[in-house]
Length: 209
Ligand code: PRP
Ligand code: URA
Image 1 (cartoon, rainbow, N blue to C red):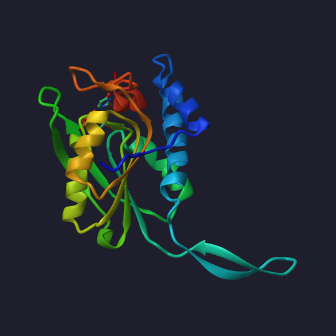
Image 2: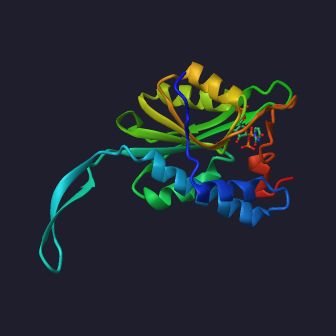
């Protein structure tokens, strides 16, 4: 199995520790999710192609590089993935944005889709799918199947905390998708929550519990 990219930069690890703390309040939690998303974006876009251009500086002409025009799309999985969107857009403001609404049925843990709105030219874009939590992997796998149905072929999945079970399930369903995570945790508990995790990401971002 292709291993996920674990982005264990000290700044990310520090911020993940603050996120895990149950005493961290809603505003700080939301800010941290965006900051970590921005740092993960830096790593997940490392392979974007560049091309050489000539730029006139005030002193002389510089041969330098700019992005070679690869088009990107960001697709947060609602709700919690929305918490990562602003951080990602800070670094790639020209990306188009689509949305997939999914929630986990609490008893079956199966994802239930309630919304899908993707950029019309998604098949021409490299897609970064955003969700802070990869637990059983059901939500991410379904969201990516839906995005593929719309024609997208180059997809990466970006999350903050993943359970080994979710990584394996997502890899089995979509072996072509590269996974970027800030932390690989121990396991899932009997309720499908990541241990030690950070609790319910959507509730902590939006203060709904
Ligand atoms: C959470 C999380 C993922 C999903 C992960 O969403 O944001 O989408 O659970 O679990 P899975 O890997 O087992 O599918 P949730 O269903 O709580 O919805 P919410 O974001 O609307 O709170
Ligand atoms: N969804 C969450 O928000 N947290 C978990 O631990 C598992 C799924």
